[in-house]
Length: 411
Image 1: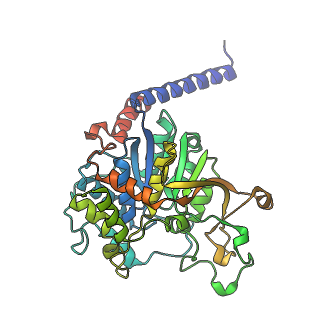
Image 2 (image 1 turned 90 degrees about the vertical axis):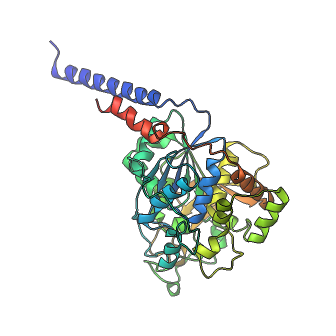
Image 3 (image 1 turned 45 degrees about the vertical axis):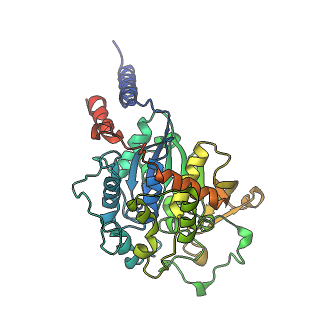
């Protein structure tokens, strides 16, 4: 007759064996025989995020498993998911990619809020008569999974590591890691749009200057990155989670890329490309719709540069637009007593880093070729192929996942 301990060990072994069998059955059920690079796009649904999504949908080596949205960045919570769904509908991908609604409150707020006038312009970018003036399908629905839940399940049951492209605050990603630490090894590379990577020697003084304001900050510190400053604590939690690789397209380098419509239109003529009217208006109306104070020639490619960097690194391209990548150790300043340094990243050599604990390893792009960047971007968005858009709703990753979970995990 078995004693109680032996019986409990046997039961535990059976339960573990069944759990492992269910895990493998779900992974197999998803039918993951795609050789492309699996990607989750996490976005605050800003205008340049739409460009990045359009670009990546048309890259044949990328398989977008999900688009998850945050509402604590450059889009209001009510509009962030809705606008991504509407945008997919406008490019004939209505039900082809899951869009999941996520977190709308940062893990730690700096006290600084985005100007409501900017948010209102971005929220109504697609439909406003003074902007793109598009009619959208109001019946398009988000994924049955919440964003953090979908991130966790996607990583957990993927047959290979999944890259994550972060185009807004890292709130969703940090929350997913907190809820289930076992997903960390399944994250391939996290690609970040923005960030600050200055050497400590670049700061004239690390002594707080009380004249420059105190926490909470009612305006962003001048050298910090928006996506970081809006939720610095989430960045720290992701950085220190053990993710195998972090790659950033720093804000200062993004600002070196093409900045006006003259450059854009010259390149279109040079390439002899005629974009369809919606696509052309989408990528040229940022000044008019996003910031009424800017000139009509204003043009920026912030988040899309991170998307193109991801494709370059995934495919080990030696002729990509990023011509120099540097390894750095980075630390973001969270101390409320840091005054002007709050939310900024410092990086330094291992020798100096020895004085401070908590540095994270990053690869960052430090030099670019604008001509190569524009050529790749415009050539790709001119293509008619939507490589990541599934032909039917039931083929979509989240719907297949839901069916597989129902079949194996809930029985």
